[in-house]
Length: 331
Length: 262
Image (cartoon, rainbow over all chains, first blue to last red; front, side, top):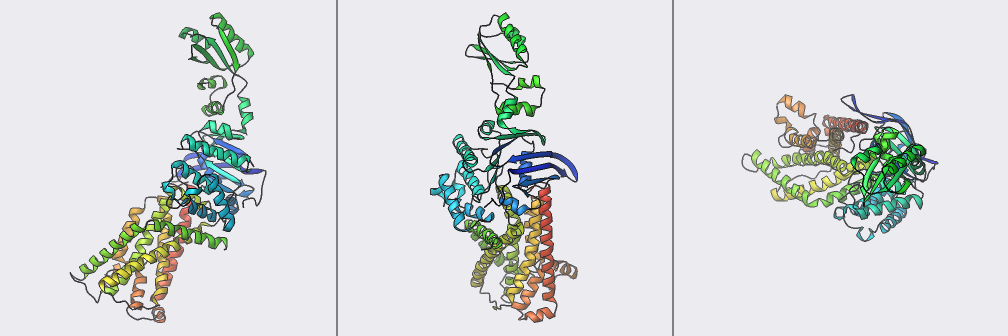
């Protein structure tokens, strides 16, 4: 039903700002001049620490919060001016433990939310039936949601967001509070939505391993400002080049460790691992010379592929290039 | 079915399903309300049931009972939906929220009417109250309810912005019992109080309903003496003011990002 108009850009955010006021005085600048394009058909990770402005942005996309400034278009429809058409493009599971009526059954919830989005008739019933089958909830369709486990409730919430077959799905912390099994189900579903059904998924999460596994593109936001917005592979590539791990046999004492100032040193299974940012090959050779001077048997030297968590930590902590790698540990 | 009608029907149906799930609570509430009426009439009759006063008290009490349910449920429901996150889902509908609110009102009207009917039948049977059945009372009741829904929209809007208004709603519905002539006719009040109470949402409705149902007054006569005109103006003003205030509060809540707060 949502494919009235498909733009190559699913969500376009222009100069978006949101300042919250208390007694006419500005208290929080949640979003600050944000410009963002979410390509259609991709999983878009929208990441940031708590209070970074993710939820405010998501709610502005959903038309639930009025921006102080700026414009949002979903599939080409302006959220402020063409609210009705814009809302037809979106399905959302917002942050929180409940997005459905606990007093109603799974089937009644799906019917209600389908009608709420303007769907009706056999098409809606077929879609609801298909979703309940896919989520293994068909047998319990007539049970009240309050009797479901947290994972099952979240599955119903996602099904309700999908029942109108929107082309854009917004998932704000969809795995919050879920156990490993339920998280995995949700994760598999997100992958399926994008890869098999061509949906655009905007995902906010603190589970960066999940974001790395699912996202095609990632935007990181801090204090309402965009730090980066690029394909995940490119983002990881940017941080890839200067990160090394040197493995030596035996343990180093504190005096020996001080020779490698600026690097992370840890002991593991009788070995010592020296890791961190090494600006260039000359510096790397310098460190290897120190290893030789300390008569430490060299086991291996390898370049480490940073993961999204490393990149996120570095960007959000906002430290200088040399020192920021210090914050990345447990490699 | 047209999408707008479907939205109203959908909202009504959902509310009724939820209300049905709370049927035992509602039944208990009905018993409480019936006991309050029996106690109040006993007290007002100076320790006995005054059979002459009973029909008048009964009509006033029923209109107040409508007011009680409508006032309490409007804000309570909105807060409960904010808490559950479903209020935000409702606001993400392509259908204008005005229609959804209308659907909720229909549900409240239907469920409250069922409750009022159950309470009425029980009380009539228990206390042998004799009320002449006159159809003219129905449009007057609907007009009264229009004003009442306007008042509840004001409270609903306030709930969206200020959140904790359950205590205020409770205070108001109790105040309405004593100030709107539900138990004691407004004519017994001092002038200054009578003037004030006539600005409240159900006072004029109770006066006109009593005149029509018990006094045998016709609608045309009520129109001629101005009481029905005043009720129509009064209810229209409440409905319009309630609607405007609700939309204004909705906008404030969206601006301050508090739609989902509770």
